[in-house]
Length: 269
Image (cartoon, rainbow, N blue to C red; front, side, top):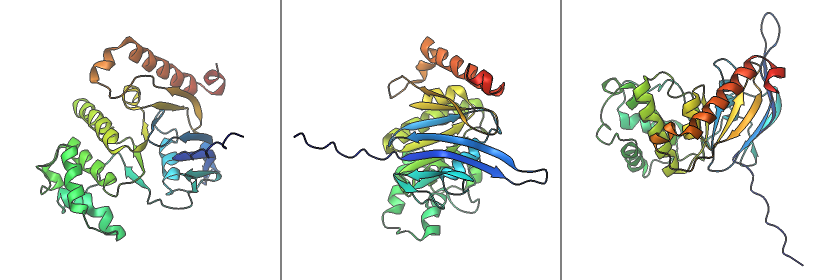
């Protein structure tokens, strides 16, 4: 007899039939409708879709900050039933504390949660160095550019060494040049830290450059209308954006979003 096959590892993220409905004066408003997907350990998956389609609501449910109206979520096989300490969060606004130094902003989540601080200062220094901020640990947020503040926010999200990184349009408020720099920095940092990442964006080229796989969502209520594997090997150089295959994939994704915006029948075409 052959040996039994080893048990299959649970995905880092499992979303099963998740929906979210909010009450309103005019009646229930459905933000997310029947979304299902998985993210494997170490995978970088982007959720791509137009503004206001329910992407952020979905991420908040994965983080345990919103409860689903229907369906279930699990991280590494464990149900999500409240705020998760296993995830690092990064939002559009860096939300740094202006009276604290860069180093203390990075360390803040550990202090707030009462976690052990042994070695934390050294890890904060290592993350800041990785983010190109080793000379700014004692600066205040007002002394930094917008891109530098977002790098600090990324270090803060990673300080507790979370298994999963959840990012909600973290670069959308940046100018184009700074945004390109941050996309490159994120790709390098996530690869070195080997983090499972769920990245929400409405920027097609950004999603293609960073991701292993892209989930396309249509208009609200959010549902996955397409799933696209990104075939380019890592690490990726900015020169890949001139590759005809890269641009063809961007055009395919743009078309998928436009069809989704026209309604379910067009999305299925």
